[in-house]
Image (cartoon, rainbow, N blue to C red; front, side, top):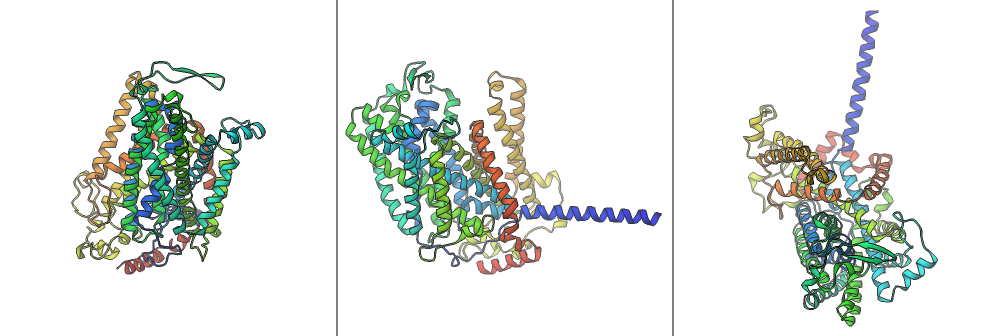
Length: 638
């Protein structure tokens, strides 16, 4: 009997061990990290772009719908003349994210953008979430810019397209679908999809021509706005109420900030969309001649140019015309009519079509490349990774993504598209900032991301970062003890496994605290304004805990690996970037979050039913295989 009982215990213990082992193995599958090959010559894509091409791509894709269309809607309904402050806040969020992208562009010069950066740092599940959100952002970016192109062209010819489709093909589903299907935007997307399948160099030439026209038009708008504008339009009377489409609408309390600071922040969350074009540069890693230097320079330069343009044009627009009279679909042509420059109306409309064309090209260019990168890694269906031998472009991914974008442009409204795109992009930016924060303090690079950007002349012999040599510089694991002194006053000058673990834990805590802080400030706004003690106390406690974790990270030793570009002011800048991104996400409405949740649910179904089982990295999941692959990569890098 006793022997039988012992056997039962043994059997139960064996089952428990097997289930724990299976659970652990499943967890390792979710967080396995990508092993990147250092060789540049194995790219299946055409390496033909230079730094100027990247700056033109970034500026062209960014200076589009945000200034020619969105500025009117946000100024009229959210911010008023204070739209310039909304653009400033949105630019801050983008610059912080842009610096993080710049460092990773210097680290990992491969196709994939934030998806790849997450894959080499925090693992496969987070990488898929990031990539899936990038696809959402690019698809919606393409759809929204196509609708903006259609609206601008329609305004130019007297709104005949809108009248025709509203009369004969009206869709009565407010809050879900657009007022009418936009057939013209579908045609535009299909034409540019065809252009992108011809080749990268041809697309870059067209983009540079349109970008030059775009910059000239924006310069004209700024100069003419400051000449013909009046400061009185920033000092409008209180409680403006106008009749619009048969209904009486309120337009704030007047003055420079008619909707208050909450309106400015709400406008900033939407204006953020205007700056998302820069991340298309990060997807060109395998198509640039010198990616380690060209990608950071391209990102920073394009963001600076775009901020000056957005700030100047939005100021000129609201000076030329009272914000409550701005047209929500095509504000600039109407503003020039208002000041009596009707001839300029057509020049601006034609120029804005060129700008929207480059913005559309910039949205469509990175979309198939992220899909290609995910499909090549096995996380999406493998046929999407096929590359045309003649044009060296991911043709199947280009055609598929263009078709999806065309369907969304056909059915959905511009404002709904913009908000949904913002939430996906903000999450991707937050993950990239977190990856920079984590990776800078790690003792050993998970997959040689550092080495790829390091050249022999940049790295000293005693700063070698190969796995075997870097381990020799660390304290042995048995000598590392967890204590408060080790946390606040680490003994090492180089990162150790203990210091890396401390940074990982602190970063997770900071992420949770930032989400709590932002949720409290947005959802508990009324309690904070009324001065409720509990709300203010909780806010102060969360802030202090976040500050303590930031100081703990700051005290840990940084990696000494030299790169062509590094994010300054660590750990403050990435943490600030995460905070701004999360706060802007909280500003978006509930309907946007519901649409986002549906998109994420669809992504999780694809990942757990297909991606996790077909992942290329599964072959490296065994420790021996992973170590062997890592050693080979070290040899290649040397």
